[in-house]
Image (cartoon, rainbow, N blue to C red; front, side):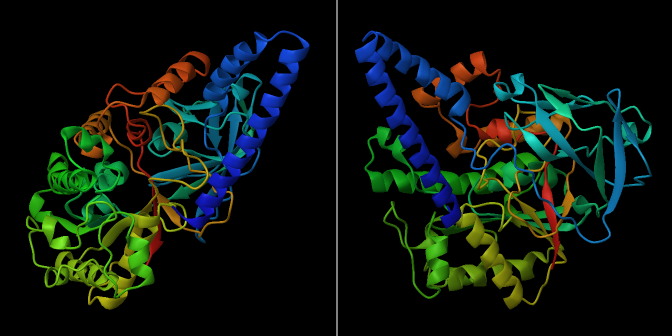
Length: 464
């Protein structure tokens, strides 16, 4: 987690504590002045209201405008909404990615139920109380748009009468040689299962074992170190085996075996070895025996930044990717994700092979833990961008219903996404289902089954 995300969380929790203290003082005064039994009743009602409407981690005001810049030369076309129909002024040609910049304003119900924008048969949700510029994803709807048959309408919100359509036309990256950088097992599936299941030639490299937070394995009679080692072995196996479900053989999957949440420390001291925080292991070769090729880090097995960069440079030269898929260093705040892309860029500088471009993904966000908002199967609107981002292009391929189901099943195979929810989260979901109208998919209980299994995948395109 980056320093900015930590600061946002601290501020959020501080504000909650202050609000709770004020509420407790008011309840105590009410109990003394009116009736004692009102205090427990109001406490219960207050907790239910909090879980229904105030439990989201939203670290910006819903009235803030999103701020996106696109590369020079990006086509921008005026678009009007007339009686619910989208009327475009101009031609989009063979564009594959269509992003509509439009002001969205919540109605009074949209402060209690998630505002929805329906784009044909697609649904994209936004923050309750939204009143600002947002970016809708119209990718895959170009034919209906050009024919004047695309309906765009708001539910629990009002849409501005006009907006700007940003039109982008990309290479077909499924026909290129692709290398996917996954900091942990499941990152490749969350971000790019649709891409890699259709790619002509793809390789997947997972950087860490993902061995930490292994408490549930202690129920098997293991101590904390043994539980972490078991979890690391299981997630390492996931990183090699699950891609086969999407057509990627294990001969094109590599597990590097570094340790979870140690990549930033490795980057700070490149020659220093950083073993696991929980398993007690210090030799990355423990999970490398199934790799299809020898790597520089195999020589001594030390978990150092120098070995990681050398491993990635060797993999670039082996697979010779034209495109590398890697975490977005400005949008995705997970510390291992930021360090993964940093290591990749250092490896590119040290390697004899240079890819043409990066496809950047965000499996986590600084500002909104629910993005993409709304139920599984809906489209992916652009995420919050309150602070300026680099002016990258976008590529947003569409996933068929069959591919979405396969993606959900790939996630269901991941050990870290299995298991029942804690009781508190179950209660929260029940309350939000009844009072806020939220729904979760039947494919799995983890939040990523809702967030990642979508009508689109979304990548920022950056040229090297």
